[in-house]
Length: 441
Image (cartoon, rainbow, N blue to C red; front, side):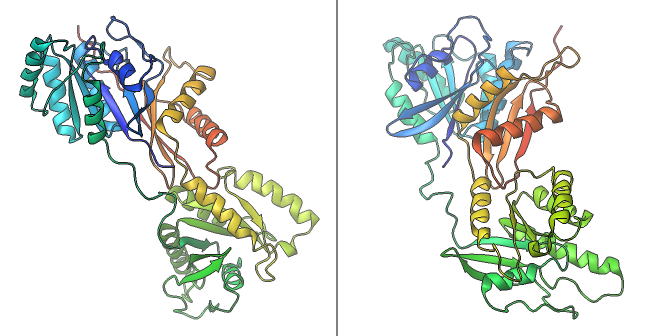
């Protein structure tokens, strides 16, 4: 699913932003009130024009605690410049250019984002002349409109579509070439055996001699009717005198393979207790932001007692990655190896999941109303707006009125997974705090 482009609407109070937002989205949803700084719980809306959809962000109710109108508008502009693909700057044509408008124009010019200048409250010929004076702002042609009566709104919407990026033509979920898979794990867990079984022939030389598999060997292998590129880390152990040297080479190759891959298959020897090295490699995959599948190998050597202890090890050692698909295999005999494709597909799909901005903010709105952030020191940080700027791995940016606690961020991640999936993929959540500026006396 490709992301809808985002249009941010900024402007001083009482210039008609919310009326214009309602006009753009074609329904009365934004709060319309004459009191400057009226807080809105919801700031994003889905709009449709000429068969194209986009998200409208109304920055009007941003940070009601900001002291001074100039600061409030500057913060709106700052937020808009960060989240938007294009910015709609609304000016009251009857009032003309104010000092605050000029300050915002400086920010907008620096942002290098496309800006559409809407001269609102133009109802007659004289109004059009007043609007023409806004050429002086240096933001291009002012578009004379009347948000209240709809005058000029069609032309404005056409200009908005021109300024927004075209939706990507090709499906982002279908990257070119075979998907890249790294088979990782500590030495002797069966990485080469698995690759050989998948390739149905002895392709990987398993040898401890110095110089064996100096670089990761990429293998194109057909699985489930499709080709996959397997980045092999077998043979990474070199016959060196110091143990630290061998460990260094092993970790270096593993991290290189992880970085080159899209999804990592972590092989764990199920017949032995999980080690610190296993956990370290799994953490490295998560930190690098790759999709992850965990394969418990040598399952034919696992008896009832070992299974009991393994369950407890999984609960203890894999608490960071409960989202990773787990499969049990025996690479040497090929038992259940065919389950790998389904797990890889699920992990890659989760890794490339994108949540539209409108759906994300509806979800965040519900979440915050049901489970608000705890009050700390008399303050309660709020999530103002969220966006997902990228996938692979899914990365979210939350704009907040204060710093969210780590526990609350984990709670958000858990609920995101319940709502939208993200199987097999780490989720990265960043927060941008609207710090309050110093109060003016």
